[in-house]
Image (cartoon, rainbow, N blue to C red):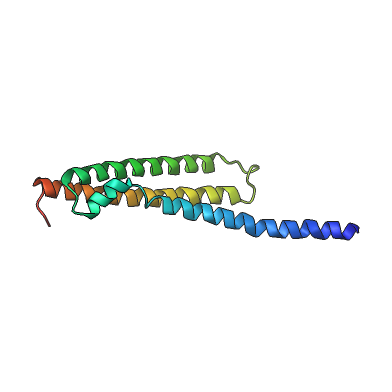
Length: 133
């Protein structure tokens, strides 16, 4: 009977590892998928149906704000990674995870910055302040 308790504990432990990994990866995927739904639905639909220059300026502002937020999150994770001491994270697992999260946020910030630039250029072209290329 004592062995059954140990087996249950081992089974529970072995089951907890894949569940934990699944939740971690789901969080990362959710984080990266979140970046693509930045615009409000009404603005996105207006842009899809030949949006105006004001719509493009509004989209540019939203994307610029999102890029700033992603960059701020990346900095926060980088600072946490730097603050970890040798004794707090002897094998470097936490530090590695924090650096990976920071890199993900940096990529999202770069993507948002590119979308900002695209919509800003579209708005300038539509207002005649920039030639169409």
